[in-house]
Amino acid sequence: MDVKAAPNGVATIEDRILRITGYYGYYPGYSSQKSASRSSVTRCKPGANCPITRSGISRQLSPLSVAEDSAAPILELQSRSPSGICRHSRVERQIRSGRNNKKEGTQTHTENNSQENQAQTRCQSCTSTFLKVVWGFLIILSVSSSWVGTTQIVKITYKNFDYPFFMTWFSTNWNIMFFPIYYSGHLATAQEKQSPIKKFRECSRIFGEDGLTLKLFLKRTAPFSILWTLTNYLYLLALKKLTATDVSALFCCNKAFVFLLSWIVLKDRFMGVRIVAAIMAITGIVMMAYADGFHGDSIIGVAYAVGSASTSALYKVLFKMFLGSANFGEAAHFVSTLGFFNLIFISFTPIILYFTKVEYWSPFSAVPWGYLCGVAGLWLAFNILVNVGVVLTYPILISIGTVLSVPGNAAVDLLKHEVIFSVVRLGATIIICTGFLLMLLPEEWDEITLRFINSLKEKKSEDHTEDITDSSVHTRSRSRANGTVSIPLA
Image (cartoon, rainbow, N blue to C red; front, side, top):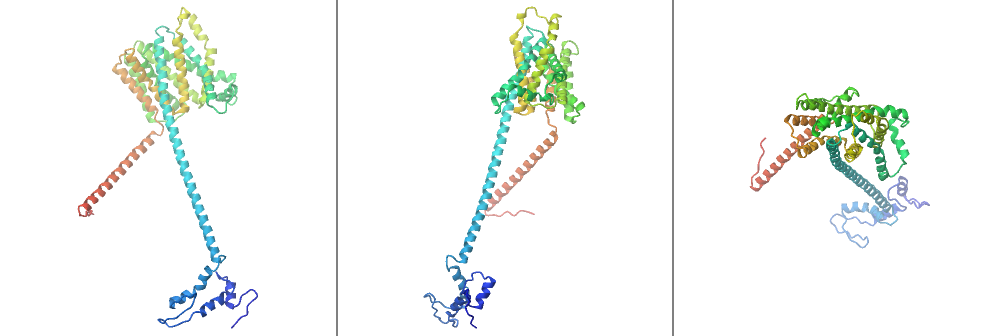
């Protein structure tokens, strides 16, 4: 049955159905072209030669060729014109593939950037750690050298000027220069420079939000200034009775006293290893006192040194209790304030001692100002290095620098002063230094030790497994080379 062509060019019912159902690749006149192509095919029996004229090409029709003919219109549509639908679909596929490639490229670029950032972060962390270690090594040498130099110059000064309190007062006055030195470093290194008054007010917050007032100056500075003076004065008195090695070793006991006071007063965490270290420190003190018998200057010198370590520990614990932690600027401000308090309120003490002839020197020109300035300068350098070292490197290295002053003083005493160390004194010094080093262990030292041991065990097991694998591979290769096959036993 023939159907008239519609105005829109749809000629047959098949065209309408294809148009309504949205057949992919449909265009007007599709059915007529399809029927024409079918009519152009002459069917013949299989095996017979059937001449078919299509574009001047002759071929044999078979069931497979019939299937190819049924698919011919679609193939013709796919190559019909550049504006066809199939070309549009190819463009869409190309666009999608381009987008996917772009996404993959973006993801790859992001991964590369993240890897580069991680590498840069690792390099920066390694660099900072290396710089901290280098600074720590330099700080250790500087701290130990300054402390050894201070102790040895005091011993030399005693030959001509035997007045320890005047030396203490004179050296403490030099603390006033701590904050100006800190501010000079601020001007040299800081990008945003502040005026001296503004920086002074900023650093005075260690005393409270209101800064430094007269009431706080007297209330907070007075006890710390007294403890500072007592610590240094007792240390110098001990140097009159004992060698520099013994005094520096006994002064290392302050670490054990800090732990005991913090445990009692500040309720710090109890650690068995630090209790052992405190016991070792006390044992070393007793052995040092027993070295020359419990009589004479030896026991008095030990008492002075232990008193100096005790006042130093009390100073540190009270500072932590009332003022907390302080940065470098606040510490410089506080030490300079102690110097001002010493100059204003403690200056009357050496005057009284002078007129009472407790510390009296007849010609004023006989004072060895060069040695006194050397002691004061090295003492100030020691205090600056201790506070700078906390900023530049690890705090534990500062303590190591302090304990290294013991072998430094021992070397100087042995080579220059020709001091002969008894076995008891040498044993006491070693015990005290060992206890000091035990105090430096972190609170999680047991967990860290267990992790380290487990990692070593895992590494050994991995190496053993790799050795077994390598040996088995080597055995198999040798057996194959010899023409035999090794069969593992079950």
